[in-house]
Amino acid sequence: MERRAIGFGILAAGALAALAAGAEVKKVVMTNDLTTSWGRAVTPENVWREYPRPQLVRAEETPLSGVRRKVLPEDQIWYRRTFTVHPRKGFRTILNFERVDFRAHVFVNGQEATDVPHEGGNTPFSVDVTPYVKDGANELKLLVWDPTDTHLGGTGKQVLELRTCFFPATSGICGSVWMETVPETYLADYKVETDAEKGTVTSASFGGKELAKGKLAADADAVTLALPKPLKLWSCDTPNLYDLAITVTANGRADATKGYFGIRTMGTKLDAKGIRRATVNGEFTYFLATLDQGWWPDGYLTPPSEDALRFDVDFHKKAGFNAIRKHIKIEPRAFYAHCDRIGVMVLQDIPSCRADNLQHDIQYANKRYGFYRQELKEIVDLLRNHPSVVMWIPYNEGWGQPSADKTRFTNLWLKRYDPSRLVNGPSGWNDYEGGIAHGYTKWKQPADPVPSCDVVDRHNYPHAMMCPPNAKRVTIAGEFGGAGACLIGHYQDLKGRLHSPVPVEGGRWREDNRKRYEDLVRPLVKMAHDGLGGSVFTESIDQFWEGGGLVTFDRAIVKFDYEFLRALHKEILDAARAGAEGR
Image 1 (cartoon, rainbow, N blue to C red):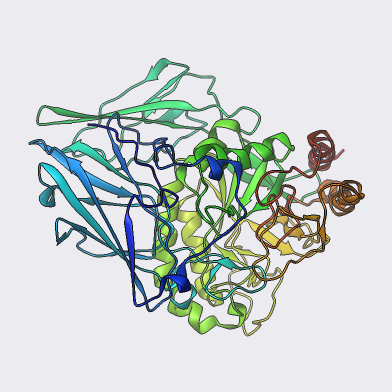
Image 2: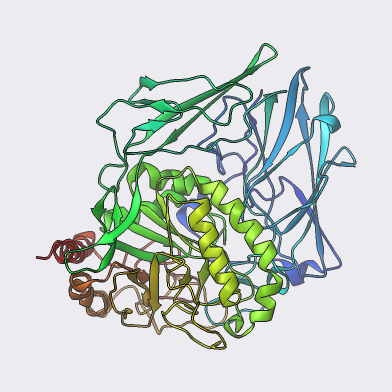
């Protein structure tokens, strides 16, 4: 099938006509003078050219694209474009949407192709449009409604009214829209479960050499294959990935797909002093991370290109971090694939809803609990095959967190549904099992003394603080920092900055910023030795009016030299290992 260079995502303006009902253009269009180098290079022909689904790749596909459009809750967006397809007997035509915020109806040639409109702005969805397409030119329409923070959906930091640490909302098509042709019987998805002790997996090769293969019967649930030992385990130091090829054959037609997987084992165990710490492949591991929010001045929630997305991940590796806390946002799948390839762990937040005083609004959180659990499962299914994702963080600082019983239900379900990762249940706020409790306190300690999650997490600004190291849960300083240099010309001041602006040239901002960072981070050396299991510095990249990042919002200036960062971070990792080993 022809691959047409018409662009992906929200940045290819004009590729798909967007019409807002009931709103004047001046009221909804977002403008911004601050851009990145990648954003300035974007054209409809070169935006997001890589395959959007790195773990289920087919040889044939056609990309479509859309435009960013912000609307109010009483508005709707209509997208319209034409596309060409030549249907073949015995094949299906599938439309894939990486991200549409929030509710989407899909129409092809005047007929609705979605039996049930898709809701949720964080996960991909697909629609089989075979019954509606015709040979030649076709019309695609998309009707989108986005209530942002006035509804039950997981909006993360999106708000309609800017305040504190929350950012401008995005609406409509926020990710790649693309089309593929598949046989009548095709592979819709797959799940890889590995066992490092047994050395088993589904089907694989390494370095181009086939290591194992097998055949799955039509009525079977799985096929188990034995890999030769020694296994090539995945870790930050050795991000080994096995190639995966799956072919589904039916009625004389084959659907051939390619993917990959990594073998790693996440766990916890007691150190020499009886303190519980995290492990990767049985080895004590300290999570040295930043808070990575992933917003862009020219794309907001959508990175302007694959190279731009990779820059953020590569920065962490160069600076000596081994992990990223992906803060209440789900990235394009290319982000996680790059973390898989270069060896960066991801502590993944689940996007929350309405952030205003939700730690006191338990009734509202209980109302949205069913939708939240549905989206949580979709996110886990989406990212389950990425070895870099090592921890789930279902609740951040009480935003949208329900009552004690439902928080516990969520944690226990996560541990049961995905035992291959750690669970950091209530990050930094309402820990109903003995950690920090802020705001809402009308709860009792659960009768069951067994923790429902693996981590106890404390947030504090600017200096890192931790709950006492203990034998039950790994202790993490989940947020600290938030102080840095806000450089004139490199932030977007839509509502008022959180830091005093300083000029890029002249003065002592680099020296002052370095001293400020070292004062905040160096205490982690002793804390890590004494039992702290991980830390998350706020933040990696400046965001809009937040100037506390290690890199400016436009990604033009890295505020520190990498040698300084790597040396300081190595001290923390070395101290953590020494403490775990009783040295």
